Amino acid sequence: MNHKGYILMIIAFFIIAFSKGQNKWGFETMVNSLVSNDVDTISSTELADLLNQDSVLLLDSRESDEYRVSHLEGAKCIGYDRPDYDVLRNEDKSKPIVVYCSVGKRSEDIGLELKKRGFTNVYNLYGGIFDWTNRGFPVVDMEGNSVNKVHPYNTAWGIWVNNYEKVYGTE
Image 1 (cartoon, helix red, strand yellow):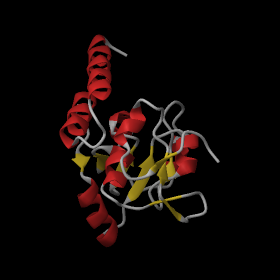
Image 2 (cartoon, one colour):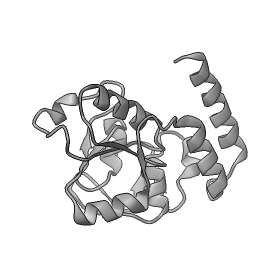
Image 3 (cartoon, one colour):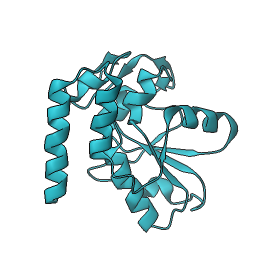
């Protein structure tokens, strides 16, 4: 991580420490401090509309423990620490792809790599699965059942999960 990355991380942790999860301004400030917008963003509402009318590939860039707790229906887990780009081996490089993580930082990194690999229609879900669930949009478990829980990465990040049960490990 470069110097700018460390500064942004420190700013984000101060925002987290002194904000409440219900504070929309605090959440947006935190997200904006982490995301550079080098990958076009899409809002949760825009994604919900897109999923109702178009074919889009959803990629979850969180780790498998997070994905197993819950994920957006139809999402493939690509991961972050060791991304599995094989999940894209047969995909059309012009197909719309929406990448998400907890808040948008890891997914932006994966989105940048996808663009380098020639994918041309890549979007980052603004605010990630936290914003998605805070707005009441559904998530599913590994069997495809709707659940009201989300893995918040760790307890510090858990303050941003408002409406769903926080599950810190797999069950």
